[in-house]
View (cartoon, helix red, strand yellow):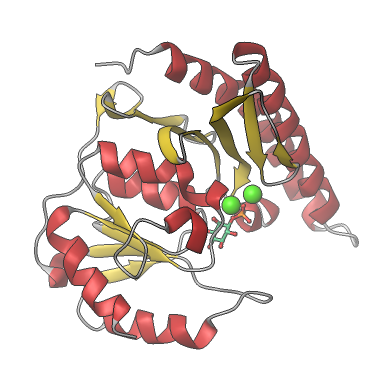
Length: 263
Ligand code: IPD
Ligand code: CA
Ligand code: CA
């Protein structure tokens, strides 16, 4: 049941190479935690190093594709329909604080929509991979979104806006709607992994506002290929443009959308 496609092989191999550096650097964090300056600069270097590795590996395999990179911005490719969208380290705040929950997120966008995605969690060696028409996988296992239909049994993931982000009041109103009717809401700190976990049926749904394309592009195709629904908070398909996303199984997506779009 391994996702055998040349494209996913290229993407998973690149993620594994970049992860080696991240794991090494994560091992240093505890020492830096107690230093006066703190680990912030070190982490931002770890981030950039991982991104350079990904760009190098992916360019080697697909020399004509362009890039949208969290750290490095846009790199135009001669192939105008294919573009990599990359977050080399999603969950930076966790990484910085020594919390072992972060990921590498690589999406291939084809003609404006996510076509394939890899989300790799280095610490637990969980490789989530999906490609249009091929399905979503965790390592060798095919993924399916959860089958829960009742809100009071459903567990949701979300992201809470922090200093420097907009929408705090709007977000609190959304949280109030969901917390009142669900089995719980979790804030783990990596939007890419939140989406991968929805694809795996661990979370029944996820929503967040104020995101960037690199946080969600791989996760969108992951959830879709696992049989889930993904929209923006208006119920449309402009997740990458708006940075707003709702992902869930087909039963709960509509319910979540109604609650969130009302506020
Ligand atoms: C962040 C994570 C987090 C989300 C933030 C993102 P970063 O990405 O995905 O879960 O709530 O909005 O910025 O900064 O760790 O790459
Ligand atoms: Ca991110
Ligand atoms: Ca990042």
